[in-house]
Amino acid sequence: MLKRAASTDLSRAAPPGAGRAEGLPAALLLAPFVLVFLLFFLGPAAQTFWLSLTESSLTRTSAFVGLANYATLVRDEAFWASLGHTFYFSLLTVIPLTALGLVMALLVHRFVRASSWLQGAFFLPYVLPISVMTLIADWMLQPSSGVINHIVGGQRAWLADVDWAMPMVAIGTIWWTVGFNMLMLLAGLRNIPAELYEAAALDGARGFTLFRAITWPALRPVVGTALLLQLIASLKIFGQTYILTTGGPFNTTRVTLHYMYETAFTQSDAGYAAAIAMAFMAVVIALSLLQVWLGRSWQRARSGRGT
Image (tube, rainbow, N blue to C red; front, side):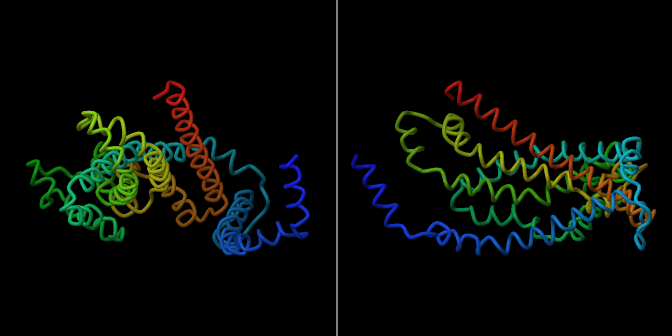
């Protein structure tokens, strides 16, 4: 009775439209993001989808062809090959980048006195523009004067080798971007309360036991986020392969965005390039949702086992 009377009094005291008035500041704060999202994402996406339904060049839009571009895309071996190269690059980079970023974050977090120097050294390559990064990688991979061949004692043309071109691009990308994952995971490490480690140390926990029982469970959501962001970034690779290998040798490093670029700007087939873009966007969204679903399913399974 008291609760009912209190709720009745509150409802009488609240003026009409109070809920809408309270939500107005939030709507005003969200308005710039919504406007930018509509103008620079949904708008261009809708225009790209419409373009994919036409037979168009870069300068003119021709007849409406419906799903003809998508029907051609399904039978296009070059598209599927470029998609396979994109997946191969992602396989070479997503997990190694996250794992190496975690190791670096643990080192920075462990060595407190040298943390600033280590953090700066690990993050420094990430601030380089892609042109500088590819210039350094190309210099290191030169057949006769490259640092890599000097170390291994050979004269291999790494970027012209069918088997080694994509792994070398992946290694250069890992060196270039691992600093971002390191910072993200380091922030997660610093958010873990020190009292947990102190209590575990009193119980005799040391070394890997602390990592397995405290660090990893607390850091798991951050690792999942890092994996998701890295997957999206790896699927969108373009600049590294375009500058270092131009898609070679024999198109073995021509990724999907590179194929889309060639279709639009070399072959001047904007309609088909738009179909490639829409299909690739669907693949990226599907893989991202799949990773999120797998991560949540694994988390629920772990929680169900009481670990």
